[in-house]
Length: 440
Image (cartoon, rainbow, N blue to C red; front, side, top):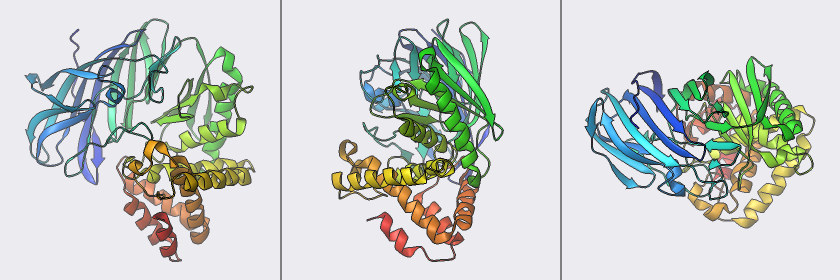
């Protein structure tokens, strides 16, 4: 089936350079997981380019999960080639500042849940979880950054962009997405969002929804009828977390959706304005209320550190995960349970150091074979390190530094050097000894 798309341009920022990036997506989803779609990516070249590189992250589970069928530059059909199953390259000569518009037609098959991965590209009778279910432009940093899609940690590395999407869904299914979604007629949904690092997308059937407002943010919780207690608990934790995050400044999005889905090997996953949480923890007879709160608060904190301020999850996973874990602790402090989360972090950090004594907080993802010690070292040890920095700087200076970090790198990509520079500049007392701890 041939689909049409509209190429538009919006402002973004890449490593401090002005650019335009816009995704216009049409995606048809079958009830048994068939995907057919077209995406037009429009922007401005940030260097002397001879090609554009696009990532197909679901293809890490198998090449049939997502693949390109054709490519067009403007209205002209062009050649393209795959350098590996997760990367497609479109030859195109561009100079800095030159605009482009590339359209890719693609298809795929969403596997049944349990076929591999975290379950974020998977289907069940009541869920179609469609993480990165379309080609995504790679990050340019003097060359296209093509990082491996490992079975542990996060794979996606992308620039913030504006999205318009038309989702053709099976009748009776509800589309939940980053940005805002509206059903324009049965089976056809329109999704729009600004400054999204990706378009998170999940389709659900037979779900209930409850919503509330906190700090000017609309919070919606989607859950199966049988998991109503957990659905309401997720909403309560999210509401209280937003209030606890006040020292960071205004929340970056006006809407956040929380959705209960089956997951494998992870308890929650973040997308811009969208959180997936393992449905196991929604059941009070099977889950752990403390851990469930930790999951919700953590993924909500990722809206600052990942969705708003981007970083490379392969080379510097600590930059969002450690800071996100620390930020989630603000919720527990507000609940009078700081001692509980600190105890959890200490145990987790101790286990991580035992499991992988060679790795450090700032180690790249590849330093954690099969994920060994990853959570304990990067998440928990990293969060405890930020606690030390706050104690050294004082809370007022520390949060002023984090607000400045947000302001300087909002909708951009930061590095560890950027954050450490800002922390050092805002601190009256030297941080040298603490900085050395990061690599040990």
